[in-house]
Image 1 (cartoon, rainbow, N blue to C red):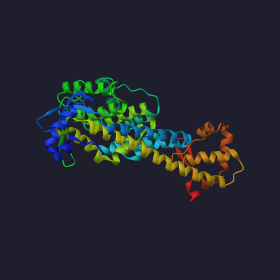
Image 2: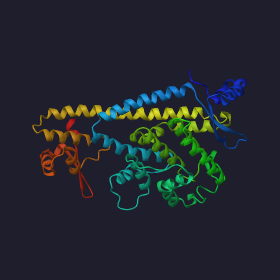
Image 3: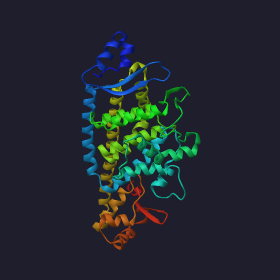
Length: 400
């Protein structure tokens, strides 16, 4: 049976509400987080706390069980299709994190950056490149307020300031003036912390929690994810920055691909995502961040399971198509191998693969690979030129 939130208890059992709050707040395994939470336009602020429930243990177990299945699948998938899946994940993650915030971007814009087809400065280059960097062992410091500001400058500040100069940062590190978050109907639902001295002090506390040895990684990530949004240190771009930081630490603690699927899952569950913040902010909730952490664990679990489902479906499809390649009864072993590589290059992102990449994968001479490519019937191939480079993939129509 799920542990009732303070909000539910307030409405269902108002007489028990005060006692339940005191019992949870004073429980032996409750952690007091050193940051006060105040709902917009309400008089009272409450110290944030977290108490461990059975849901935390159950969802943690589910997450690591799903993660084992994810790793098994990733290690079973051929590298070319995994690379195509990675490119598609970057594209979808950037598109999704922008969509969540109502920032207009197109898949073509993002794809052109990933494919190196940008001839002039593109407003999305910095955010796309940051997500692409999750595939490498790039270390990004998030130890201090200045680190957060430095990252924001590289990530999206220039784009934001260019589109709306009023949103350029004007404080020592963060914003100098207040900022409100509005609902779709224009109603103010949250006001970021103010003034800047308080922003800095609270962010320092949140960063300490992010790196604290008192909590497991996923709890630390969930707490910081909430507090960053609550603080709202910038005039614009807070949500995108917050989600990237979460993706970065998911990549460090788990697998790089999971850092590229978070916003995709959140976008499909946006109403529930925003409701988590609204309930955590609520005066009735009295600073209890346990429901938010449970909801955050559900998001992580959903992200892993969603990734498994998509990757498994394509992997099964790949195996089915591989049987059809074998049915061609190609006498040349290398040609059969190239067909299979070209098939993988047709899935997910579908960019195709270059001759140089085929040479590297097969370990054969360039001329040898080129001769095999030239021998493939034209209706079996899809060839696209991008700049001076040709990309090859199998035309999936041959399997219809």
